[in-house]
Image (cartoon, rainbow, N blue to C red; front, side, top):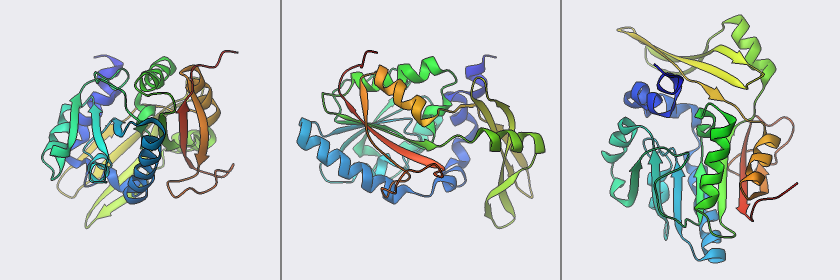
Length: 265
């Protein structure tokens, strides 16, 4: 079994699609401000570029894409490597308003241009190498017109905290419903390659299941350089979807880039 099969975007859906909406989504309870932010940005970009189409990389079960597609003037396409995630999405009200593509979001099989491309909820980190992450940004840039926008959202790495959690073996309860709870721990951390493996454990009185995810986390400054290589220039970085100021204490960030062409050193 390859590393991709064990840890990649495809296996993530195979293992977690049936509990994703009930449990995993609870870890990112920010859908309303996310949709508001993206809809406002899509409207501004449409005025600048004439392109109102929007693309989500790693659409999952449609947590963001479905309400965004209901916004006036927004046409949403979603790509995901997991057939199981897309099947869940197709069963939801409003799914007919989202064009769905099953495939690799590193180089999505879609026809541009899109005014806005976005990737949220740490999804970029599911790509296990820096090379694939750069290819993903370059692929997104290729689908944008001049002045089009790319948005990333994810956690800010904290290597010391990751290593401490790994060494202690401590698990943290992150969600609960009656007698069932979702715990999260870290079972591997490689600061050299920036790999971190969170392990979810769904503790149910009737049964228990675990799933390990592989992340390659990216530092904000590293992301900016990767984006520049792809022809994307940072416009603004926020601490959250409400536009909070990004500081050295921020635990997450929302970064907005515009397509300007690759910057040569």
